Amino acid sequence: MKSARRSDVDTLSNNLPRDILDGILGHLPLKDAVKSSILSKDWRYKWATRQELEFDYHFFELFAHFQEAKTIIYQVLLLHKGPILKFKLGGSNLIRFRDIDHWILFLSKKNVEEFTLRVRSNNDYHLPSHLFTFRKLRLLEVQNCLFHPPPDFKGFKKLVNLGLHCVTFLPTVLNNLISQCPFLEILKLNWCTNFDTLEIDAANLKCFEFRGTSKSICFKNAPMLKEVTIWLNSQVSTDLSAPVCSNLINFFYYMPCLMELDISGVSLKDLTMGGLSGNSPTVLNNVKSLRIQRMLFENSEEVLGAVYLIASCPKLQELTIECEIMNDVVGPVAVVQYLQDHQSLYDSVKLLRRVHMNTFSGFEIEMEFVRLILASAPALEKIFFWNFSCFLHQPGRQLMDKMKQFHQASPNVEFTFEEVVAEDRRPIEPQEVMEAPYDFD
Image (cartoon, rainbow, N blue to C red; front, side):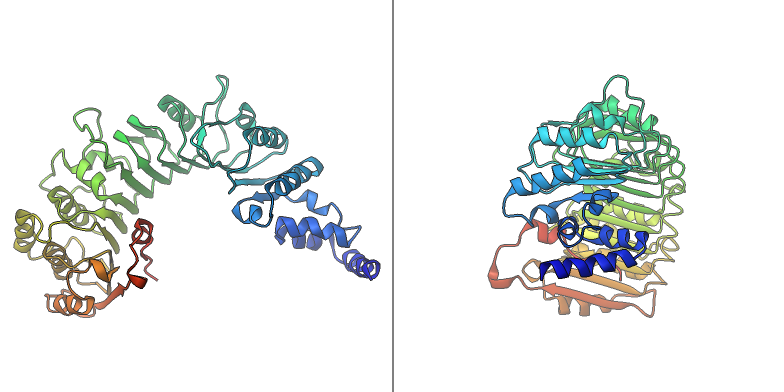
């Protein structure tokens, strides 16, 4: 029976063009592709020519024992023929550093274009020198590693996408790396080395993401930058009297093409501590999407900074505010009065169409903020609110009815309030708040 089954598969494989057969194997999970060699002589080892190898969490969970998975990785690499354009490794805390070194050494001869490594460790895995010989690399993502290139390293000349997550390196190493990657378009630095001054000089950079600690971030040359995410560590005080480019206007001055801005409330507070100009800056004239994460309405600098930032984006179409849970239900009296005194933002948000407010509790200062937005946006179509019921000052339906009584510059605003009830009165996990919906679809 087994022989007949194998014969049928052999007949099928002989009648299929090679490109179609390779395509079928290319879309199979790696473990299934390996199993295909059991059914057919012609299919045997064809999986060893796959150009994309992903040994991620989903791969490791297929095996009852880690040793079995590791054996397959060695077999695939040792028997592999041809180039490996994409390689992804991660998802298991049992991987030994010595094995990773061996696999990277093998890959150094395979013309890898995309390399992703997620190590589950405490930043004590030192990336081997072989990695820095990947001359055709276009995407590099590493996590929980020590990043120290050899002295003779001349950069990745074809690198387009660089993502470093919980990676330790010398600040000068990053500056040199950026300058030696002339085609870099995407740069993501999340919870890496602390910086005194982070300087970005990348003429082709289009997307920049930073989460971590830096006393100053300075964009010296980023004329193509369209997407920026800034989340400074709130647990470390920021000395804004030190390096340049610390105030709001200077920070955005060298990114005239910016269209999408994602910024945390504490970052906004730090950027506005240098003072706010009486006139709105023109450097944000092209921003269409603005997201302010973890905005604390109790903090007057964050609220005033947010209003100033919104008013500085005349082409803004989508606004997302993620509210921090407030301890003081009243909020700063001066800020409440400031919001009440401003009838509208005039022509600043005349193109705004959609507003989304996560973890909105409905306290007075939050309600005044919503009132200002409704009175200022003649093109507003949708405004969406979301929170757990236990964090609401009043039931969502009552809050929405109150807001509908505010003056609305737009006659066709659709209100939606999503009130989530925690099951069985269990504690709310922080990640649940962080994973609140914010898409506008």
